[in-house]
Length: 209
Figure 1: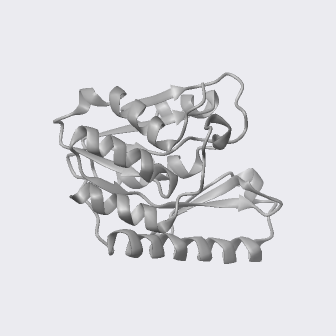
Figure 2: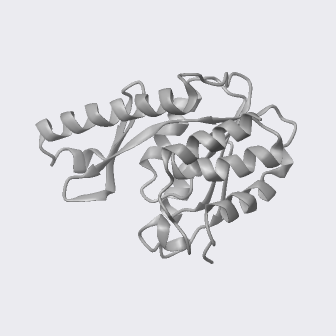
């Protein structure tokens, strides 16, 4: 099954998440692509939309392949085997750049504000999973805020990553878990255009009403 676009995927996920309506939900989207889905889910559930910003460190010879993820606070999650083979100077420089980009996005998108997650049902949303590093780091970051429950909702995930993530959250929802993964999230969409900063700001503004 291919999704027409992120909006369609978000609406389909929103239907699956309807049972959590009224549970003190906060929707946390991974920018930028995840914000489009998060907007649809937050709108459907009447819930606030916030961001959880983790940045991918791609392999120097294959940037789409994540070897690490870094959060706004500098916390990292890495494929240590791959990381050990990477030039340290390049790696440290790239980590610093991506952490700076995470901070820039928080300031641009939300003026530095964050939702209080303590005691809330948190729904973490992205437009799909490949290696799962950025999402796994997002889960760790959310857990530091002591929510009552963490739910992960994505349109598509490789089976091995889905199995791993399912163990670390209260509920994992994926519309598709193919046995043979096509290698890139975009392969599961008819339209997978890059989401702009302006679009993220617009959706967050509309979500706040």
